[in-house]
Picture: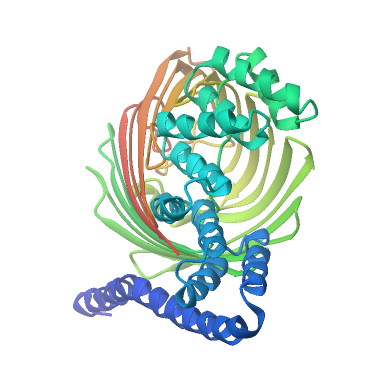
Length: 496
């Protein structure tokens, strides 16, 4: 095919993807409005004869099954007929809280309290809402008022104790919990708080907001190393929940690579994977795809993974796959793939995370690789910062030094200490800084030398939108064999 035709074909593919990205939100909105109209019609048919009892029951049933979007549609449709119904507003506020829509929940709850200032349930939910927004002083005031009215109010005591733990005031938290246990000596939550305070563990109730089932993500990666290799990678990923326990992930990738000695190499990859979770402790992933090289040749790739939870805090799994090997332009010229097994495991006792991974793969150029990796990390938590320290070990072994762009000495080892801090001042922003320092030996008989890495990750969440920016600076052996590299990544995601 002439170069001009190739360029036009690529332009058409990129235009198609841009149109898909542009219309996804509109399609979602159309689907939601259609579902909302259906919910309104069903509620309208029920309300005259049955009142709001069945409506609330249906909404609560949907919430128990984590179908929060459906519950919200039901409740909003019912409120069209009776805008001031306290029970419907309260339940809708709870559904908003469960999905992280705190501002909407707060407006509803304050509307209830304007009409009924002493409504206990609305006060409790407003206190919880303010705590989620880290307005602890206002939330504390509500809980203290409820306890002044009724010192035996267990829910208010639990909320206030949790707040004080988040605020780093363990003595006051312990006093509140002790006073409440006089009225509720069998309260498991209060006893848990007392135990955590005694161990010096702060941080009270945490909310797990269910993530939307579907997402579209686009990202760009850039790597520049001391061997003169430059790499740009663009990725588009569409994740869909097909049914409970079954998800699909479609990935498209464009890779542009060049170096001082190698011309520009352009590759495109496609893959599709299905993940099935038949039971809570077992997951199966299977998928396949292809890589198209600059000269038009195509190589198939595939993956099959089995993952199981063997015991509480113990995860293990295995993968058989064929993967693309193209860390730089020189390797891309050889159109390499590697096929073989990989096993992995994780053990996560309290405040610890221990990960292990090992693989053996046969390369299409005749090489054989054996890789082992292990990491042990310990965490210390404060209300807003998580500190981590630990150790990481890596070993790469190849049957021959093929010198084809990918890093292939006969025996590589590294030992490094790991220190990191993850900072989350609110639910919208998360920042993480990591440093690794140690030593490495790049081949058999070669002395160890210093090796270090600095990286930072910044993540911003705004409703259904996520933005991420990562940067790393390495001073160690990388996949290309270079000893210094800078890597950056920008990611943009929409959840629906």
